[in-house]
Length: 321
Length: 277
Image (cartoon, rainbow over all chains, first blue to last red; front, side, top):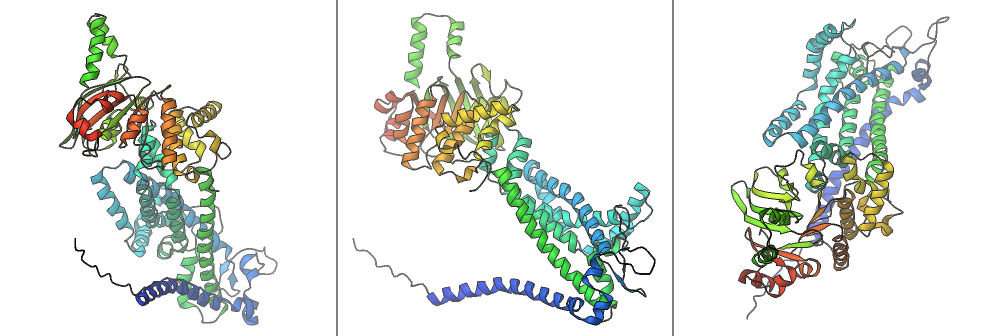
């Protein structure tokens, strides 16, 4: 038999090389953007550590520790940057940020993961096709709309329900934040759970597990990395989200353990004050310092989320070495 | 099938026992399948299959891809229930219980009829937790009992010596062959009476395969085993009875020796000798 000669095309080394470099550049652009943004923001905060004039007004110690602002009065944490005696204690803002974020997470984690379990494990095909897009649509609502809703509707509802003194408080802001976070947690968790292989569900079913047991003892642990990624992403959003807390939290820098007191968060403080601050003043630098802090917090959350995950994984999924 | 039923009928005739005794004889089978039809949606994939599974024997199901042997296997522990749009007609009995109508909870069947799948599918849990899983989901809480059964099952699955020092390690640290033996141990832990195996060695290398086959030979002393296999030699090596399926029909059923040396049907002979399939 006469074999027809096949002419295979030689692959171009040059194009391969260029293609690889091109996507590498793409990857680095994002990385470099993050680094540059951080450098710029932190640069504006540097005078707190270097400029003697500004250091008279504000130092790291003044932002962290209790200060005796007026002679003879008790030392306290206070955020009053525009006062005669400017007070730059970040503690109240830190507490406020944390309170709003914690309420948001307490609200969003059960709802987001619960919805993900229902959608991936129990809902019929048609139900799933309704639930998934609707929850994901929630992510598309601009946060200013959610904040507005919390300011007008939710605040009144909560005040009437619990008989609260303040309409705008951590609970109100936290719930509104939670609504913004639910779709984040839901989407990531649902994807993680639906991608747990069918073979694992079958193995559990064949051992006599019912649907609940399959979901809770096989699918959920197997989807753990995805669930934790969703929670970490959500927490990052809860810390950084600005518009909702600006509108719904009351913006009073109060230090208390009470979750129905008004709160002022880092992000809302920046949004509310940066437009009116004197360029290059101590206040200006402090606001940029807060911006850097938000950066660091997000980084810490991601990092500790990873650490926690590794530990939980070896507990639930067995040691890997 | 013909040959086998004939011999059974002969025994009944010889001892000239009446109808009720005949019933008793029938129920001596571990599982009996009568006139089984099965549909995926409108697609009928099993036609009028009747078959008896003898206790403490290995029954092999053979046939070309798509002949319905895996579907048949999965009707025996009601795994097909999990697939929407499936329908079944006919009777499947485990001892004297109709597994589709005679029980309250389907897990009652699945704890008595265990299953090992084609691709090893250990849970992303530790080796110990994999084996203990079936016990825990079925409400066994006694830790000492669980530990005892885990060890016993791993010994039975010939895996204990390889993993006894690393029980808290992830099952994913094991090799493919070890993972499959882990899955067998997991199935054994809940002490089933019947074990269904769906091509348990088809994804394994020859050494792991022969370990699994040796294991089947040992396990049949305690368990009734039904195995689907594509490997004709494997069926000949490990099984006592063989059922040949073709296009959803049970073409022939009988002692493995008979099927492989003197098949009654032309189709069976063609398949076994490799003329098609």
